[in-house]
Image 1 (cartoon, rainbow, N blue to C red):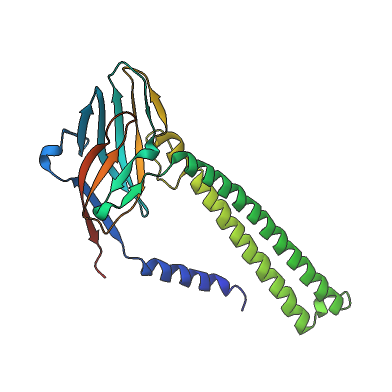
Image 2 (tube, rainbow, N blue to C red):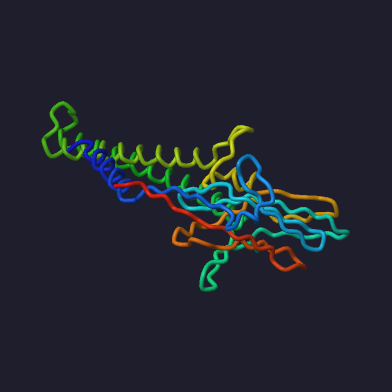
Length: 255
């Protein structure tokens, strides 16, 4: 029975991976005439209202999110405040998907990291306690001689070792998840939205633009695989929302 939990865990992970179909997302402007220019292969849409220009282009998709590049250019004579939380995807039947809040994502990631670290410590102490208790029980049953441990005490000790191994495995997994989430990318590397540094350095965050200033960043939305056409709406305070039409294609792998 020893270490049977490891093959079982591997089988469960394999089954869960097989159960989710692989999908590739491609998003492009709904009409060719809406394209202002191309930037490194990505078609850029641009709209100008009252001396404020907003430009957007589709960037990439992860398993859970759609990511767009956005730039806001203030050529007016007054300050403007841009809050990416106000952006949304306009779907059919008046349904909307709001953009994810970078500040909330950062806070929730930091809180979850602390929670995982605390859980890992508790599990490590629990594994050590079970191992010590099992060993003490085995020795007491054998009259102080480990070499003459009865069968039942051996089973208890073996159980303690398995529990300790399982706890160690869980702790290592927790640490690996934390390392991935907090991995600092190189200057040329843009992390995915499940990495803390994406929200810290690459997402579009709430920004005040002085006259003549511009700001760039990425807007993130939950995926909407069932939608073929949708609008990306980018509100700027004091102006009607800037709307950009997109069409979406989903390519699924063959079973």
